[in-house]
Amino acid sequence: GRAGRRESELAELRSKLCYTSLSPEARNRYGLAEKVKGNECFKAGEPEEAMHFYSRALALLDPSHPEACVVWANRSMAALKDGLLDRAEQDASQALELNPDYEKARLRRGMTRHKRGKYKEAAEDFHTLIQRGSTIPDLPK
Image (cartoon, rainbow, N blue to C red; front, side):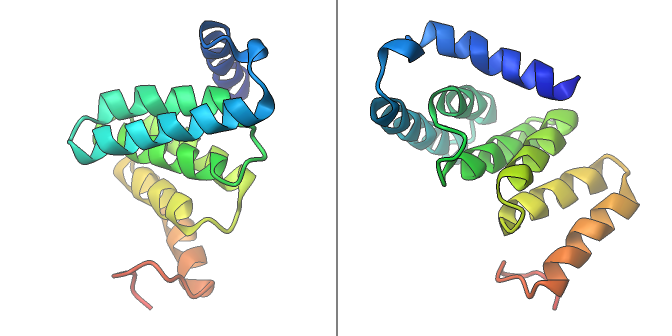
């Protein structure tokens, strides 16, 4: 399924990044540097390049690292900008699996679901944000 494909994608990247030769601390440090590169590409209007760096970050970061859910949500936003709606929804859902309280991931998943015509699921995500008293600017209260 999707989780298997996602894990095989990350495993392939890990083999290219000499993953096993790095200490866990080095992997996290390099993963965070890849996240920064992804952020720079996204801000420059290059969502495809941003997804590349976010994927590398995800391959390097320990899944329990607090920034892992942020990287999944960032890759979700880049995929959304690039029109890859299935991937955007999957990545936002993965971010929420790691941290169900991460508001940006829930917002991005709701936005993606809305664009995909999944209005009921999108409304559930938006309703959850409103119920939790979201701090995201411009979200109706």
